[in-house]
Length: 448
Image 1 (tube, rainbow, N blue to C red):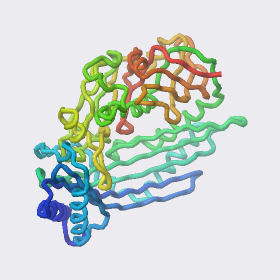
Image 2: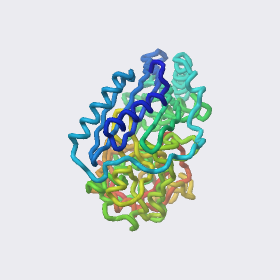
Image 3: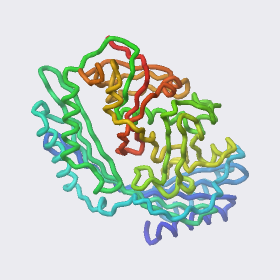
Image 4: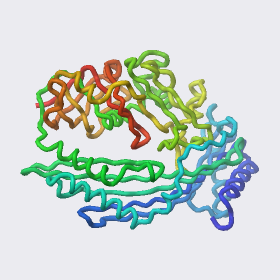
């Protein structure tokens, strides 16, 4: 970036675009540093490090938009990017929604999303962490003699934003993670169990002991797994599996998808679409949240959005463009990188905790399935169909009994959501999408 500061570069690009004929201009600069170490069988298998910086430019004129990006931040290159983006805008199709957000500059917020100590972790520090996690997996059970890998990593993101209405704003965010995939062997059978944690602050990260031992425990729990007969029974999703389900459901709550009739929830705003047990939020202001940020990819103030409130659909998540098309306010949900246009995405997207322990959800089931893992993709948010292969444990008389594999569960998403009859109190954030355990009154289990 030569002798120019990020702010000087942003000012230069935006002001040149406005002088060159853009009615509105927006520049988005991103600087990312990434390091990850992968260990397998006590040996370092891979060390990855990268440093990326890039700037994206959007210009608007006569309801037309142009967009370009570059990783070369030398002033002559940026001058050329401005000129070419102006030309692209002139060739684009005019649309009424083509203009940037006119919301005021967000307030300065302290979200505790940046940890400078993360940046000081060296590859050798991460190697020691990954090795320790792997050793703890081996120590947990003698049936665990190998791993697929153990990973430890860190990342820092620096975002700079400038637009016609917001001259300049910036934030920094960090992340660190630790994960193990353990392999348990018994007879001729091998099963893999994984556990991972990701946090903003290194002090919040799970210990290597817990990560390694939890992965080993999950692998051992799968030994002896077999299919069960097909049946319609209650199904309890363990918290991480429920989080996977929620991740798949997100697309149906995107305003952009609703506008394009790509959501089974289109036309249902304000109506009850789920059991009264279910409340879903997207909170970009959560302290230390993995999806928290002071402003979104369009410079809009982050906020806490109640999406589903005790079963009632209260809002869809929006970018400025989708909100304008729908005639509503934006929700601060624009996700982007320097090389992409803003699109609807989650911040900290989660199901609100219920009042029951996960063990209570299971104890009330006479016969059913406790799902611990979803495999592949099984949610069609356009048609509202759900059919997915799962792994877990069979429930008999309120107790988990034998491990299960090779089964699928299926149903209509609308029926599944209305059939939720219990929410656990075990909500934990290990990614930016999370859920406590969820119990569905009855789903179709397809087995042997």
